Image 1: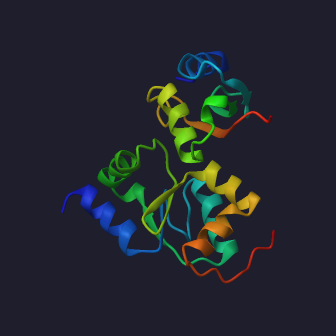
Image 2: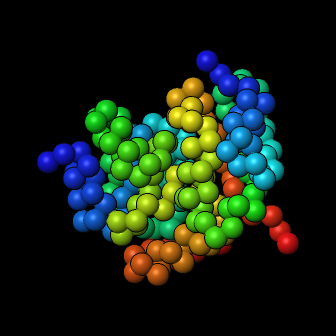
Length: 78
Length: 112
């Protein structure tokens, strides 16, 4: 069962309140998304740790209900 | 040997290990295929482990790294990332620096 973009954004923002989240539905099928998550709270963390936080936010949906989420994370430019 | 010990042994006894769907010759998933292309482009020798051959391995590697998706790249025992991170690092030249820092030989010096 596909997930809608609004739900993905809601889950990410619930876990990372300061995140700027941009989501694109790549194939228009509600199953292949690209997300960019920018958060000040990522500062000092490795890319792996940043992605792990986003995956945690998605509560196990990643790799399951959510088949493909291309993820890019970063910190805001000062 | 438990699956966790098996994985630990693989990532520690090989310089570069890619857990993937399919094999380096025949990737069965576009994300795995992208990482294969990057490693081949850099001329890095690596060991590919096909998670489609074993559900135990497929689930075991996700638990080992606390990472929900395949592919997963390891260099000198350290988890580097999945497809997105590897691609981003490659494009920024960081993957090449990491391999160099860790003393892993790459034949084709970065075309980037």
